[in-house]
Length: 273
Image 1: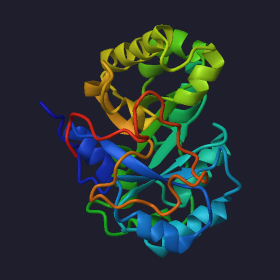
Image 2: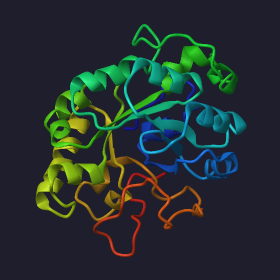
Image 3: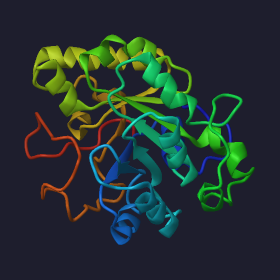
């Protein structure tokens, strides 16, 4: 049975996960307010790209402020797990933290530690725009924030896979996904190699055993893979209404490459929207 949300959830991507559905993002790597506000209408969440872009916190702050309720839940892929960095993200109004290259349980714990308020974690109260962006949340922003936050970790190395059980079981981690391209590079195995598939299986098993949501940065795993039925969280993938960003296919996206499917992109798999 789908799990029920513990409170009113303005994080619509989390609500869909709670209902057993899949969620997909658009990736925002440039400080373009108009592009962001248009794309956010069509996806479950926005993947603000801080690891592989020159976006600043001020850039993301302006985009969120321009259309805070456009549709997509604002989430950010971090450049690091420092307290100050996570504090910047939450203070400007994001409702999701995506941490790349999580090799150890210590990094997973650090990520979770500053992503929610006490008593469950150690986020401090700041004066950023988050309170005004989410001012209309029944029960109040701070009182409901912990329930609305999504904390995502990315396994991208063999160390991360070896430690998958501990990482996935970390208190405060909600979602585990692969950085599929990097996992292939770090392991030395192509994504079509059975040994690579075994890495995904280890990650999937650890994640589901811990009661968390599993996914991939590569939309190619939505269909045609033995693990496709368990995919819930994906960077990019199909929009909710068939809309396609103009930049796709022109070499400007930070999304994972599609490997192993004819004709390019993966399609929506099981689990619904």
